[in-house]
Length: 232
Image (cartoon, rainbow, N blue to C red; front, side, top):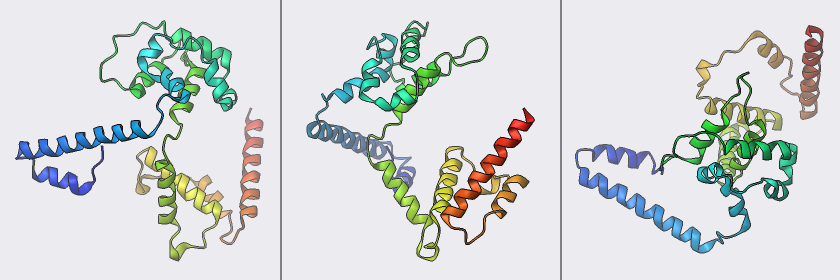
């Protein structure tokens, strides 16, 4: 639970007063409990969608419950474009036969699936490539609009009053760069720009339209593909 930088500072000041720190933590715990109660009272937690995603719970995965992922594919048709149902079903049953240590009481689904889906065969290939795609897709479902709000906040930070002429392609590029650097914990001063990247940047005119940029990108991709084919 993130309580903000000011609360962190306050806790640091209270570190020599254990009783005060305990009261703050107890207040946070009470808030979370009340929050869950409010959510449960306002939303129907028995809706089928919640039952379907329970296959992600580690104990259910170990017990192979449900016995098939067919209903999940039916409910989320786009999964057919992500993985093969038959292969995913076989991998789902196969993973339940894995010899695994007893699940830790506090082990999260994320930790469990990271360990299970990173398992590899003797030749170094992934043991459960289709199941991996299914689990990642299901865990990527937006269960709130928080991520969307963060995107809008980032957009407002980039496209300010003094930078209101930024084109769509530029905005998208800046946002992708920001998220990519954040995900990899890389700071701007650590980035290494090679000569090829700088050549591509110089190839885009400052007054280029979205159409011009798209044509430039398409041409660069075509050239790269041709060069790869020649190399092969």
